[in-house]
Length: 157
Image (tube, rainbow, N blue to C red; front, side):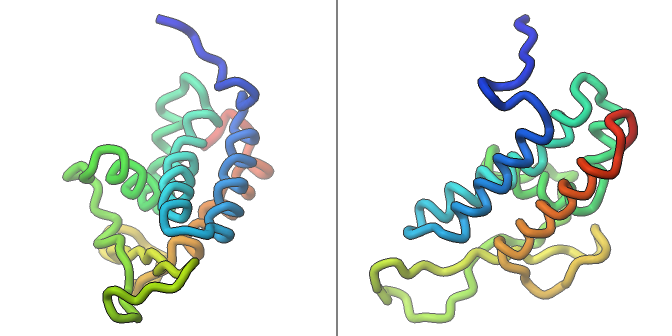
């Protein structure tokens, strides 16, 4: 089996954090619903897997990070998107969807509805039980990784 040390110029957890920020910038500036969905998908997959890049080859430390509530939510979204459904063990998110504020069929160039996440407060703490926009949650994920990558040494979760 090949031993990978990143992907092209992405070689560290900090590189992946920069990718996460790039996805976020593209998410908030998306011109179409397709762009918005693609960047949201990429953002949550990237946000979840930074833990793997922060501690390559150290599954206990990766798992300790992924056990943080914010990454449980991120992982739920990432796995649900990749596999079309979430694993039974993932219950952090009650739903991901649009909040319909306009009538079906309303069309104006550049208009699309924001995705909202409804988090299950019985599974994770410190998050609102009201729906939170994908962009607002993405900011929390970026803040989490900004803090972790500047405060915690590479050998601890």
